[in-house]
Length: 282
Image 1 (spheres, one colour):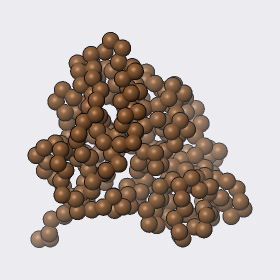
Image 2 (cartoon, helix red, strand yellow):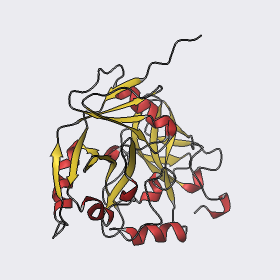
Image 3 (cartoon, helix red, strand yellow):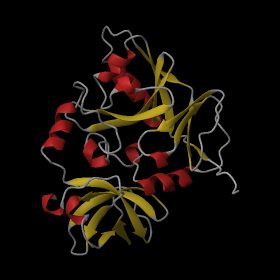
Image 4 (tube, one colour):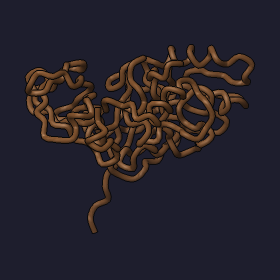
């Protein structure tokens, strides 16, 4: 018999936790975020987003139920801003929004690890995405953030402001539909109108897609050009020979040479991503 796979565990110091407590916690978040909060349960991390009233991305996070609380796994740099934004909508709702001291880790390539001072939740986006871990002390890490980045980039999973642009990105550009970050059946939420219109009218012109990098990795924000010099997108995060880039749909269907700085880029559209037929791309 072969040796059992050793689960990779990395600490995400750039993530933090918000706790939403109170008897109105579900209905409170339900009217604000893209996910169906009623589906939150222990052991499952639901991906979601907060949008501007105009339907543009502000923040992404995971929602995990823990007893009488909803925990939000958020970007650390956005936590205080998110607490303030959410708190503005409390009105008469019986809810409390506050920072929590859980550390955030991620695990992949193996079975769920045991946690005695926190919780483990399946990342509901893709089976290969593994698990989100929230704990007080943190588990011993056997992988680096760079190794986790290489794994998520190969899967095409964005990571907050490194890949998404505040008040600019539309959720459907970033895979929130296919990766289960949007509910199409619940009631209204902030920014819902544009999100629905983008889907039903087929208004997308670009997507965030994985790219192979041949040469030095371009800095985030680097303009991506065709060999003819046409501007077709921008570079986002990268690790080694992998990255994510926002690209026009019309360069994803064929053999097109893309250039960013001193590097050549090769789009690698993942199997989960649903693109329109070539004739529909604009």
